[in-house]
Image (cartoon, rainbow, N blue to C red; front, side):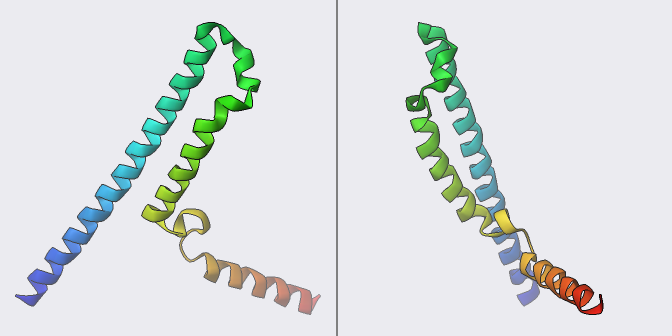
Length: 104
């Protein structure tokens, strides 16, 4: 009975994780779509391609991008940037480098 409950808890955790990942990707695609629309609307409205050089065009993109980054950290944690087992790989790399230097 306890094993069944444990499996159920694992399933619920996995289901929540999948929903969080899906939510992040939906947020990312909305971000890309809205920002593309804003840039295209400004180009079409007569401001021309010069709008791409205007820094005021990137305010929404920048601040919303910060929100996307925080959302990514919330969903993926540090594994998002450094990857899984990053510390172990880096330690091994540095030890191998020292070993090579020692024997040369």
